[in-house]
Length: 287
Image 1: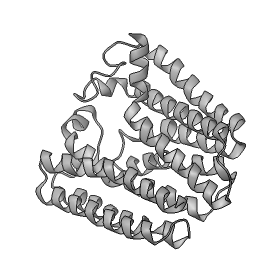
Image 2: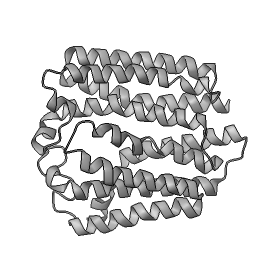
Image 3: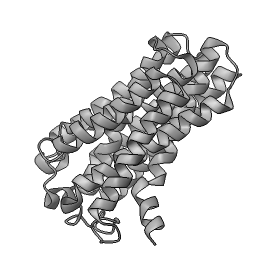
């Protein structure tokens, strides 16, 4: 029972997307460097990233356990439900997070370990404390969320360059309309728990609609940066433009009606969008 509760802390669905983004960054970095895949390095990169993500998610839940009890969507999590104690989760989260940083440092390289540490520290020490204070915390939270492809890239290349910045920006911007859909769906929960997400503080919805649509348009433009910096070719460029228009269409549909059905449709489109974009990026680069 304890093991199952620990696994729930990790939030496997989020972990899968994180690891896919890391692997994408690794493969793209190798193609730029004309290097060969090292299964050992890739293993260390994925394991270290998974541990950092697990530690970040767990420590976040340790800090927010009292607020999680007030939210319908989180009340059943291991800590609010009492299946794990705060102390048990704290030990696991700290060991997983720091273990992931060490894994990246020793198993990959120092720069990758440093990025892993920034991911962990910014999520736990900056984003989590800011969440109850301002809706703008989402911009801080999007930083660690956008670092997995950078971890993959530095694992392959040992350095940073313009193409990987484009990957970072894509994931960073994508999180803003993605989380906007989540925040709208669960705005009552967030309000009860004292999280001032945008749909809670902007009752008329004008700022919320502008926020979602503006950053969806920005995402469409940013998604074309890999073509501009030579990371991908025309096939990806055309696909990214089409995907961006479709995603924008779902955003317009949602903001014009604002029902639970349109919100869920928008959220589903955002979940599909990023893996699809990265998938075409990989196909374009390796073909």
